[in-house]
Length: 154
Image (cartoon, rainbow, N blue to C red; front, side, top):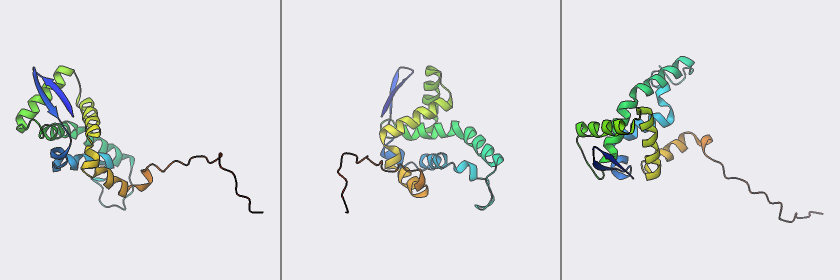
């Protein structure tokens, strides 16, 4: 949960149930976390990913950043300070002006707030990505067993 002050007014952003139930936000975060932006314009899944696909996908993701921040801000306010979309935009822009931050910086902050609030677990995004990409999951670390005596089989 993050409390911000904009134009002397306090607002609380929380990325728990109301945010996790906000379809547009979950959809955007899924696309970003899975790098779906890269594959979005490919004709089929058998098509080879090229540098052009990657650059086009990254460009689309960057171009969508302001809208993604707006959607996230709206969803974050739902739990404690529900506002209209127009009010949300004014609050977000005021926050950005007062803190002199870009959309990229705001997005990084929002991701951190989401992580702190457990958004990725609650929304199921972490589980879905773990199923899709099991190789990216952290393997349990082996603890050296040097202190144990070896069993003799002689």
